[in-house]
Image (tube, rainbow, N blue to C red):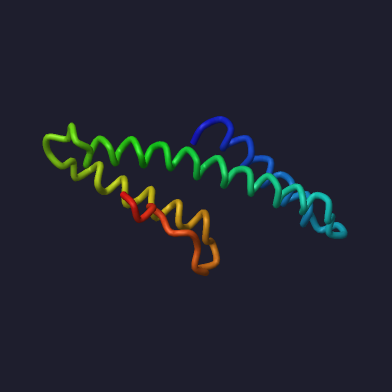
Length: 101
C-alpha cells in the first residue's frame, strides 16, 4: 500500500468514525467517508493493475523462461482483491482480468 492509498483509507475511516460517533449522525461526514473510500479503492485498483500487468509479463510474457509459481499465485490474489474492491456486495461487476489477455 502506498502513501496515497494510506491517506485515503485513513481519511475514510476518520470521517466514518465522525459520522457514527454516537452523536446525531453527521451526513456530511458520512458523505466525506464515502468519497475518501471511493478514492482509496480507485487508487488501490490502479496500483494492483500495474502490479498485475508487471507480473503477467514476467510470468507469462515472451521473455519468460520458466513459469514462476509464486508469481502465478500472486496474480490470482491480485485478481481476487480487485474483484472484491470492485464488488464488495457480491453483485456481478466488470470482469477482471480483461478477456483479451
